[in-house]
Length: 62
Image (tube, rainbow, N blue to C red; front, side, top):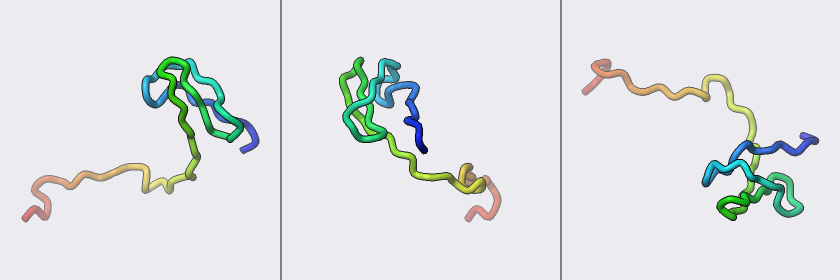
């Protein structure tokens, strides 16, 4: 990734008044709640890993 991705809102207070923080890529500060945080892209998930399946009732229940 060559461009800096911008978060839409603060993960703590959901306000949108965010500014880059520091010199490290992915660091942001929220001017509303006065918190600094770091975002990091971990990678892509396989399509089958994106959903969770809940156990079905009555099927193989013991």
